[in-house]
Length: 298
Image (cartoon, rainbow, N blue to C red):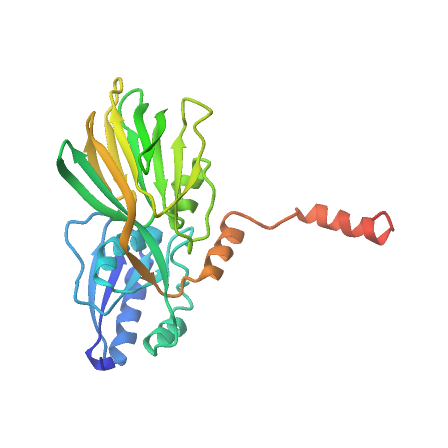
């Protein structure tokens, strides 16, 4: 395909002022290269779908904007170029003051994208499938009532894990392991792995611990009767499905993956250091350690 035939979908997060200005710069930059752009204004909902005939997408926002784009563009095989205008940037690793060079490299075919696994989530009510979606980060089953505690029967590949009584359960991808799952005590996985992280939220029993499972398996969460609690499924924090007793949530690795540009492992480890303050020994301890060595105590 000639460069003049290419089309870009530009996803702009309207909750922040910066994306609107940068979007104009990106559109102008692409126009100079004879690439047409279609702008989609993302406000956190999915009232409309973005332009779906694009050759690639540019997201302007935080990780939530990338999550939205991933669920839509992955099934169409459209790569995503994420410019980070959010706080954490575990997914969107391209900074707003340095997007031009990596975008040029991508357009010239000099940048290889990295694939991230997605969760495929289905909800069955009896024999009827009432909900289906994919997630780059996680699928969360939680309570919304007065007590908030829900009960679920959890199984993996047909093997029962028993009954979980908790505020909820998170099933996260490696990409999502740095998000809600990590905040609930789950382990952090490298984003290029293929695995699930099952993390209970404020479990009633201390024996219900986070566990990492192979993505080749299939997980089932069955909603049991809970007192004074409404239960919901939330996908990537953006799509919601109300649940009732007896519903089964089936989770597996999606057949497709999302392609992210400029989001290699260096972005992930850099985000760990800068956002989670993985700086090693405190500065004062480092100085004391050096002083001890200088004085021959080590």
